[in-house]
Structures are given as structure tokens and as C-alpha cells.
Length: 334
Ligand code: AHM
Ligand code: MG
Image (cartoon, rainbow, N blue to C red; front, side, top):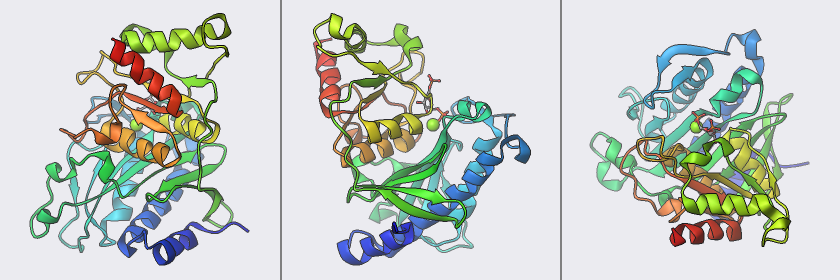
């Protein structure tokens, strides 16, 4: 019988000494909130959770009802436990400090409550992504600020995602490998079903939104065109393409089956990319690197990027090491 998330975390705390008790509590709390989000997602129209609201988030995107519900669930679940200094989310313009009525801890939690929101109403996979940082020591005794969150991805102490698909999974790293847990809905517990995971290398599969071709740099265009040519070009193998439009689902496939995921720099956005650094690109990069893959902006390692804003966007190229290296090399050629 596979072990539960609780047992895994306690053993990590005890044996590997890799997990402080407060961080364990934090991960358990996020995992519990994800169970509740899973419940709302799966109710669909019966739970009156589908469709959009009149509101927009800080990115100017129309909020889905589930975006807001999931955001509230994560805030409520994490506020009172005493493990956090503050939270930040795709759905909130600025940080959410822990109210004074609750004790404060030393961690900062960032999340995208529902990633791939456009998939909700058509019953395709969506997910929750999260990243955990430590509040800088100098902020003890004063209010946490947005600036305290602006740490590079290398500073993450934990990261993961839940995917609400045919199965509900939690994929997690605390820097000691990547572990997958499947939600046993009847019992309500997370059970380990894979890990430590290593992503297969050499799989000829890419994921990119082809409709954005006009926005690509010459390096990205060359990389994709070569792969479309396949055996008719220089590569000696044919490539397959998949695009779910939910980063969680696409990255999960890359983790399990190999290949490469690209949402490269995109001139339609003010900071020239779609995906957000702090709560999308960084946690996914941490997971992919822990599983033996690579994650780049197209030019540099994502986790080395020094953030300048909570909602900063960044080009994302991640997965198979050799494929990512090829994209970076083509980028350097201009
Ligand atoms: P969201 O956080 O607003 O859902 O947006 C992020 C999503 C990613 O999950 C996905 O990779 C990408 O946007 C899909 O974009 P596109 O609509 O160009 O296919
Ligand atoms: Mg998102």
C-alpha cells in the first residue's frame, strides 16, 4: 500500500531533516485546500461554479467564478495556522498580510489558484500552482512588504501543483526530488503514486500555442519549423505536438512522458511574455529541474531571474534538457 502525504512529510522531517515542522504544516494546509478546490471544480454546473464574473484581476483578465472561489479557499485555509508571514496570488493586486488576530510565521506563499481557467467551462484539466519562499530575516518585527517576495526562484523552499483531471494529483518538491500523490476521493487522503520522479529524456514531443507564430523570435520559429519538418529535414526523427492550454496539464505531461513546453516571449504583452514568473514559471522550473529537466526564459535559467514585480511575466521554455539547450542556442544566434 502506498504511503500517505502526511507520512511522507513526517518521514522527510524525521529522516532527511529536510522539512521544518512549519513548512510541513504549510504543505498539508495547501494540500487540504486543494481537496476542497477539487470538490468545487468537479461539481461544475451543479455547484453553480462555472462561468465568469463581472470583475477583472490585476492582469486585466476577466475572472472566472472558480478563480475567485479557489483564491478565497487558499487564503482562508492558510491564514490562521501561524506558519505564514504573507501570501500573494495571481488574483490579487498586492500581497495579503496575515491579519493581526493570528500568529505569524516565517514563510511566504504564492499561488495561481486556478491555472488554465479557460478550460473550466469546457471540462478540461485545470490546476493550482504554488511556490513557497522564506520571508527575509530583516522583516521580522515589521510588516512584510511586496519587496520581501521579490526573491529569485532558487530561493524557493517548496513548490508544487494540484491537477484536477481524470484523477486529482498533487505533485510536490521540497528540494529532495519530485513526488506525486493521487487523491483517494473515498477516503479523502493523498497517496504517493510516483517518486522520486525523473522526467524521460529524448521524447520527440513539443507543446506550444502555434497560433502565436507571429509573435515568436527567429530562434523559436527556427526551432519549431525544424521539428515540424522532422525526418524531411536534418533531425532524423518526427515530432508530435500537444497543447492543453493549461500549463499544469502540459507540464505534468512533460514530467511524466518527456518533451518540451514553450510559452516563449510574446510581443502582445507589456513585459513581452504571458506566463507569470513568481507563481507559474518559478514553481514549475523548480519541479522540472528537480526531475532532471531544464527551465529557461529562452536565454537564461528561469530560477536565476531577479524579480522586479509580483506579477512580472517571463518567457518559459522547459522540459527535456537537450531540447531546451537547442532553443537557447538558437536564441543566441539571433
Ligand atoms: P491563466 O493563469 O490565466 O489560466 O493563464 C495561464 C495559461 C496557462 O495555463 C497556459 O499555458 C496558457 O495560459 C495558455 O495560453 P493560450 O490561451 O495562449 O493557449
Ligand atoms: Mg495561470
